[in-house]
Length: 357
Image (tube, rainbow, N blue to C red):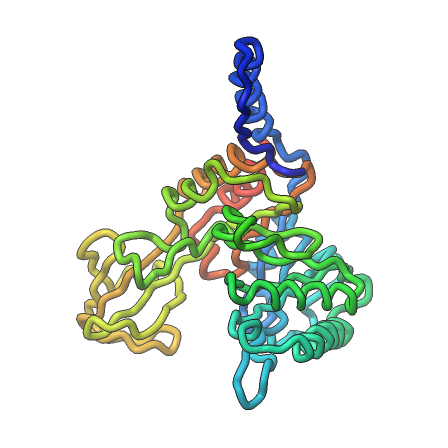
């Protein structure tokens, strides 16, 4: 259902003006309708598709039956055109019987693909995308696993919009599946400018709201003020909207005041080698290697993490400003044992259940 938005009426009767005052109040209250059924889901974004015992236990405890799995990425070069990369390394027992009721193959497509490709090349890309997804799914997923939806993930821009939308239409025709896509907050806020993708539904990505390198004093993963600016007074969106929320942290590493990479790791490990200098910013206290990244004494880390209170604050903003359908999927990004250690199972469960309260 579409979220009902404010309307401006130019009426001259005092009686009608009184009604105009009452109608927006009524419509605003309608946006706070509870979701009757929240489908629990995770994104799985690691290159090695082998769930740990901890990750399996979390899915079982939280009754997660839907998994959005990155199958591969698509990049572009002048020599090769568009090509797949970062393919997931599948584990034989990944989709064991009863573990997940639905697997949604997800493909990340770089924006350059749609800036550089012709319509004829996009026809080929749509065909290749469907072929690769179908091939991987038939080889690795056990019989009985339902695949009825493909999700495309792309940070499209105004210049790439037409080509991206063309690709989505072609993929829908070829695949004969439901096609969903990710939706960033800017195109959500400005659909008249950015267009509405020709898909069956969209997942609103409520994280990575800011460029981390351009906003040194803000948490780029989830800044509540930034989220509020996008959600308040936004127009109704003409697609079914699901929601994705962050349950991860990361650190941007600076060597000699120059950005040198991004580090994902267990927060408890990171805390043992850092000294906080100011909010978000820390100094490395001694040389060490973490996840193949060499940290030198004196390196600066902008460490961004998310706690349960901030996620709950985001959920309340979403509930107040978006009119969700009665059946909506809430997806946490992403299913990773080290990242999930910063939350209790009760906190993770509340990120789903809070939407129906």
